[in-house]
Image: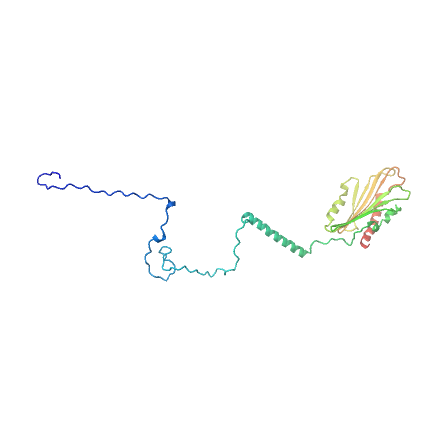
Length: 304
């Protein structure tokens, strides 16, 4: 008790106020350690009024409503019926840009194959070879007419050379005859040959024209003349390196003919020297022989 002046009642000493003990503050937990409260500890939803709406109330949290059963599936009137389309194929290793490129390439190949097959069906396959009735000969020498040439070289060749080949793409026949003016000749005075090619897969026209029409590009001594009256096209090729009687040199004449897909050539050649007693025939004379013999030989190659 403290002393107070007279007349003032004594006051009791004030009692110290008790201070509440500080409470420990909760430490924040890392997000990874926070666990949601069990479902049983969630507050119960407030009671709601019964309603005919089968879904949760739009104003209440999802999952709270009066309907405890599963939500019925609504039928889409525009959806395709079950089983209308096969289920989509699972993705494979070929998916992606590379896989799509391979797929399109495969589809293109199928379409191209179908188009090719349709074209063959409509067009009837490969074009048929235009052989104009000519036939291949195993021994062409027996079908060659060279009577005009024999007027200058009457001695028979006892062993003419001939050969042939047959293939699905080409038939070829060849004949070579040594010409002699008389039996006294020890060697051939001239050489004569015929070749016939039957092209059964490709049209020989472009190559034939290029070869014979430009034959003079090979040597300056050759001359080329285009002829009419023999098949589709014909060329007369001549060479003369002699300068007159008694000098050496060569003379040659070839008549080349294309009739459809058949190509033909008849050739004559001779060499003269200063030791020859007889002159070599002129190329113009030989050209007349070959024209006559070619006409008859082509006829025989069709009829024999």
